[in-house]
Amino acid sequence: MRAYAAALILALALSAGPAQPGPWPREAGTGFLSLSHSLSEDRARPGRPASGYSAVYGEYGLGAGLTLGLDAGRGEAYGDWSALLFLRRPLDGGQGPHRVAAEMGLGRTGADGTDPQALLRPGLSWGRGMATAWGPGWATLESYAEYRLEDEEAALKADLTLGLKPGPGRMLILQLQAGDYPGARPYLRLAPSYVHRLGRGETFLEIGLKAGLAGDETQGLKLGLWRSF
Image (cartoon, rainbow, N blue to C red):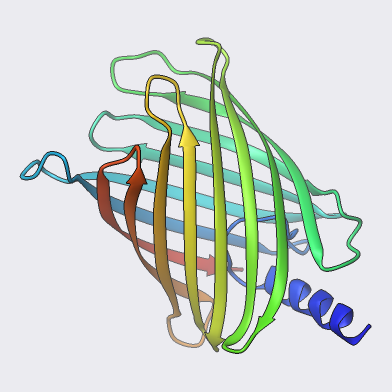
């Protein structure tokens, strides 16, 4: 009983602070915003200029367990972009150490020289808080299917994330990213990052790396700012 209560309290605590998107609902009237920019280079083509990708992600708690979100980004190399709004709701009833949520996103996607098209993105996520010898931690598994309605094509994506809070205002995150997009090889990518609180407020700096493990020859650096409100 004591372990069960500790896990539940930890999961609730993690949901209140800035963290990677996952199944924990935002408290009503609170939000989270992240801005990031990534630079990547192709290991198979040394000497070529690095390509950039800018992204914005936001969440806002509507109450009754519902979370409204924004997920948008644009790449520099091909001018590819996407922007969608999503709504997430819990499926776990708020009981026990496990958290499960479903979401549905709707938006648009496109690239330079092409007509934008509608994008539908259902998703399912799982998460669990945990206690470790180095501080509180968490694990999440997020999966999505992106349907481009005009092309009638679908892309699959899944991210496994392990996080750790070794001290106040510090987080260590390790993410394994997998995806299968039309016209491209399925990929597996490793993305570790470090997050540090700036000052005494709720603004955090994220510094991350990424490297392709299979089906992806890129490596790169990511910088981001997180803000809870």
